[in-house]
Picture 1 (cartoon, rainbow, N blue to C red):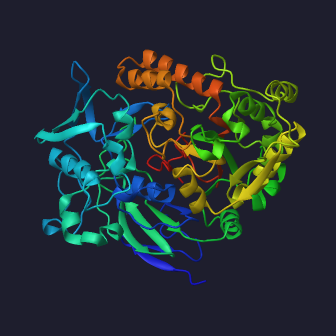
Picture 2 (tube, helix red, strand yellow):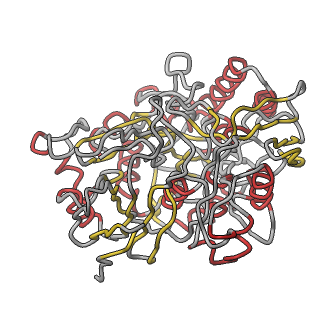
Length: 533
């Protein structure tokens, strides 16, 4: 494979093949196994794109380590009395990166008109952003009332709007760059972020350097970021990626691939002794839940003869799965068995004491099956549909269900086909996952809102009470009251079983010991502003 050996980065030479650092510069290196297709934030739909975009751009608000919203480009904000208008007050010390799209190639000061342009661009049909949905049915209009003030008028109160505005789709871009580069803006980004673009050879390497005019400082008044630059490689082999980490040519890898999981981790998810001192294992709650989805629309022909239409059968399925053993043997204890609701740890609405889910109890499962007179010998098999990478999980689940006396078979299909089937309600029992788009439990609970299509409501769950609670929650300004409503909704999902939560995920990183202040977060966003080497 051809490797890009050198790039000129702001007068610095990066030795991509040797991993050597020139002139003592601090360059953070990571590999993007899935590749990057664009650096335009309007198309930041995957983690690989979001990570790069987060270095190059900034949003009005962002999420702190405790999953609370805090100012970034905005200094502060306020809602009006009836919570239908949100006013943002902007910083005056934010500058776009130097770029030829500006007069004299000098970046200009960011103003309210840039916010207006950027947020309206997301919904522009000509742009065709995959993030266009984020404002649907929520925002009436956006106005810039002066150079430092932006007003967002909502169609009706919707408190999670602040969380939505933290998404990378909402990054602020200058109109000059869009007008100059057109479609090529995808590979010539201009933002206000802590790092600025240098070069990108697709499939080979992406280089960014420190933005000397970045506006943030640490508590001691030191200007961020501390790194001199970032180099992203695009190796498509997990084994090669792991080798590069061992030899110091990468600074971290995200997740532990099954190919070397048992080599590095114990069954209980700890770093094996032979790797201590050579690597640092980081684990942190991740706003991702893995689950089994069950179609709830009893008018669908798929459920006409299926036992899945009966709540007691769905409960029996749930009670038959030994999640703790599954985590130990399939996941090396990476993650936590999901024995509460659909809302994962890391969000304030999660509470494993107040909300108990269905835990492994095969005897109770058999009792429920007897109550509905279920006979595995005569009942049609329940087909669990999944993708190849989760084949082992499906086999494990099927074995547990068969031991409880449930007739089940496995069907493996490609991911694109499964997503199509889920969207068309052509599958009754499937493996799914839900990663938070923004740090609010509403993002999880919207999955079951009866007025939502698929996606996100893949199970076609519908409950009048649930929908009433949802509509009250999203308009509730008091956080404690909103959290109480969220928990009530989650308890309905636990009782009716349109999904069977399997595990709450965790961020797992293997890190070079030379890297300091590299802190994971529940959104698994790559945060490099305060990293030192």
